[in-house]
Amino acid sequence: MDHIDHQPTLEDIDNLQIGHFYFWNRQVYVKARTVDRVHIQYVCSFCFERYNMDGRPRQNAQRAIHWHGSNNNLNERIEERSPHCFPERIPEEYRNHTSVYIGIVSATLIDE
Image 1: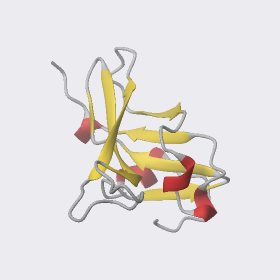
Image 2: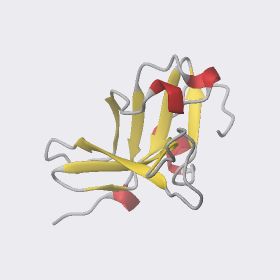
Image 3: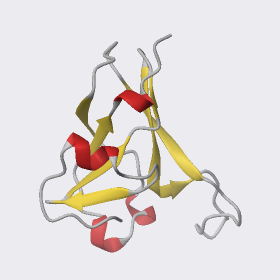
């Protein structure tokens, strides 16, 4: 998590590394990985692609990519979405987040 003491702006989110997040006012703010006319993708800071039977992430597992709809919108913006994460995979201090805010900046847009 990157520290922030105010509501993140699009400029703040643009400065985040992919896979990092801000936590402000019980909300998670992330930077989109890619955005096209159909999908928004972001690397989740909490979920992994594979888990062992005991629930721990597999060794060398990559962070999971979550997908949301982009509504044919290729503008820079911040989109609010419901999280896909299973609560038991989120560190306790972040479990009560109710939304994920995804920052969409020009570097993440793909016009195809």
